Length: 211
Ligand code: AP5
Image (cartoon, rainbow, N blue to C red; front, side, top):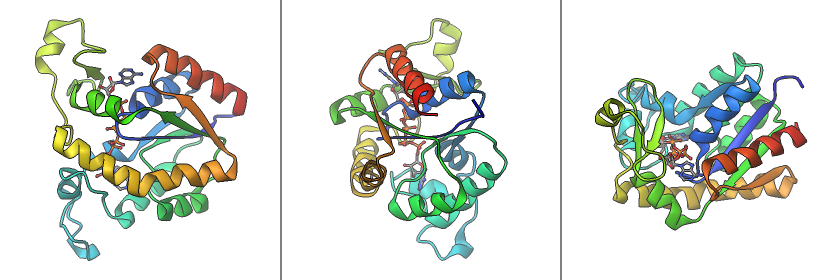
C-alpha cells in the first residue's frame, strides 16, 4: 500500500492524539497535528492579521478556535512536505474542510465516537511528559516510572471550565464537519469508548480495509 492519507476526527479527548501516534508508527506516515503546531507557536505575533487577539495562545487558553488564516497556512505547509500523513485537529469548521479539499485527497476519514461525560473525565485527567511528549492519564494510563510521574504536566486548557467551552465550540463548529464527511459517504466510525488497545485494533483494521 502507498503511504495512506488519513484524517482523524473526534471531539476533544476522543483519543485522536493517542491513536495518531499508533497510526504514524504502524503506517510510517507523518503525524500532522494543528494542536501541537499551535502550542509550539502560542506566542507568535498575528496582530497584522486583523484578528481579535494578538497571539494563538490567547484563543487556545480560552478554548476558542484560532483564526482560519493562521491554521490553514500551517496545514498547507505541513501537508505539502508529507507523502502519507495522519491529520489530527483539522478541519474544525466547514470553511477549513473546504480549504482541505483544495490541498489534498484523503484515503480514509476516521471518526472516534465517545460520549461527553467520558470526554470530560479523560481531559481533566490527562497529563503529558514534557521531555518525550508521551500522553498519560492519571487513572487509565499512569506512567510506571516514578521519575516520569513526577515531571508530568497538565495542559493549560484541560481545566474543567475550559474543557466545557472546548466541547461547546466542538458541537457548534466541528460536528457539522463530521456530518459533511458522513453525507459524502466517506466517514468510518470507530467506537472510541473501548480500552485504548481495542480502539487501536478497530482503527488499524478500518485503515487496512479502506486504504
Ligand atoms: P488540540 O490539541 O487539537 O485539542 P483537541 O482537539 O481539543 O484534542 P485533544 O488533544 O485535547 O484530545 P485528543 O482527541 O487528541 O485526545 P488524547 O489522545 O490526548 O487543540 C487545542 C486548541 O488548539 C483548540 O482548542 C484550538 O484553540 C486550537 N486549534 C487546534 N486546531 C485548530 C484548528 N484546526 N482551527 C482552529 N483552532 C485550532 O486523549 C485524551 C486523554 O484520554 C489522554 O489522557 C489519554 O491517555 C486518554 N485516552 C485516550 N484514549 C483512551 C481510551 N480509549 N480509553 C481511556 N482513556 C483514553
